[in-house]
Image (cartoon, rainbow, N blue to C red; front, side, top):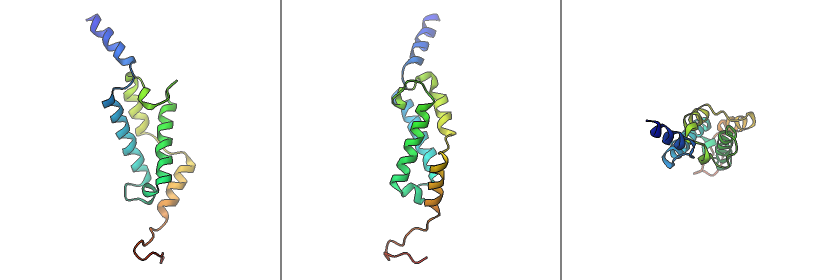
Length: 117
C-alpha cells in the first residue's frame, strides 16, 4: 500500500538502528584486524598504531557521507553502501608502511628481557 511505502521511505531517512550500527562496527573491526595482520600480529598489539588504523577507517567511512559527525548518523538507506565501503577500505600509504614495518620486526623475547636476533 501507499502508506506502507511512505513509512518505509521515512524509515530509510532515519539514522542507523543500533543493530545496523553494530554490523558496521563489526565490519570495521574485522577489516582493520585483517589489515593489521590478525590479532597475534605486532601491528595489532601496537596500541598506538592499531588505534590510528581504526580511527582512519572510521574517518574514511564518515568522509563518504555528507554532514555526519558519527558513523551512526549514516542514513538507513545507505547502510549497505557503508558496509561495502568498510569492506573495501585500505589504509593510506603511510599507515600501510607502518603496519608493514611493525609486523616485520621480530617480537622481543619478553621472558629473557633481551632481544637475541
